[in-house]
Length: 348
Length: 107
Image (cartoon, rainbow over all chains, first blue to last red; front, side, top):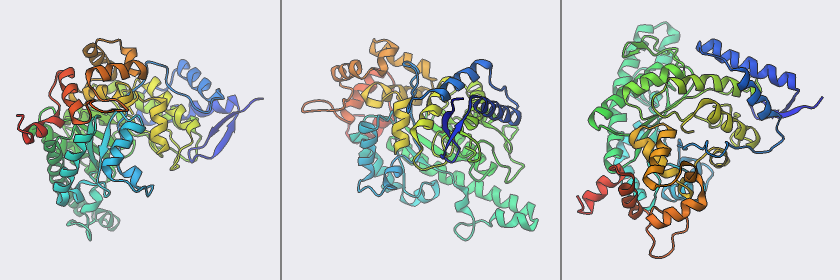
């Protein structure tokens, strides 16, 4: 019996028989359908995915005509972390002219709105220079990163220390104060970069601190798009599920804790998002076929619920990409193709 | 970085090798989904949608219209110069040119 070469969620190689492959696809898809209360895969989808993993190609791609637009998080930071001796402006031109990037993103090495605030004038100067020498749409990106607002680094008591002590009321009050501070910082930095000419703002890794993080981003987006009608904002999520670290936060009457991507995108639209980036986490103990089938179910439901463009997150550890800094192209390209073609995506 | 390159090869439009940057601009400015955004750009360029991802056809189109090309030699539009041509072609105001126009005394 021939076996199909693929990988586990941590990137390690594994061989699956056809029966094992089909079972992993069904288990992954049904797990997502059960958790998200959304439709699972169809027999046609299983046929597509079986063929995709049975192929011997080292690299695959979408059919001609199915190409989508790519946006990036931590754009200029990803070259810097390889210890390359380049400036951020050079990094942008490398993305644009060597990597085939449809968009480019400028960012600060401490990729969060709070640390950008005191140096925003320098960031504006860099962005304005970059706009002179590049051609592709240039976004400015950072994370809400509410963790930076807790003591001793920030002004507010740490809810993660209060909660184990049973101080639920105090923890919630702290989160509510953090939301107010973070919204001010996100709006301040984003407005400055927009006024300098950024083609878009990227709110990245939204929800990393749970429902307060998601709410802060929605409120900041609402303020920005009210002040600057037509301002482009991409919202990329941190995880598939909004953690209820506060547990009692609402936006437009919807409770944030527990929302999956198809619920998140609806609120992002209401708040004024231009592009939404859903995340589905990769499980390292399961195979990539299991993870990919699961991701397709969640992301397809999100894409169907969306009116705005959906750019699924497909970096290391999300979107059925292995949790490995240099994901092998055999599984990465399969995930890229399947997600675009099965989920009717607008971008990655 | 292999990840960004692999996605660009597997699923991306190709950036300024093709019309990927133009379609991305339309998505960002108008919030259009991919099919509508591609059709918008194709209509403005008077080419078919499938041509948008063809680097041979798009290189010629971009050179002719001054939209920025991969190897810009002498006397060819570069950087912000191309953005003026892109703005005129796409038919909407681009945020990246607003501050430039003020600073350059053009607005």
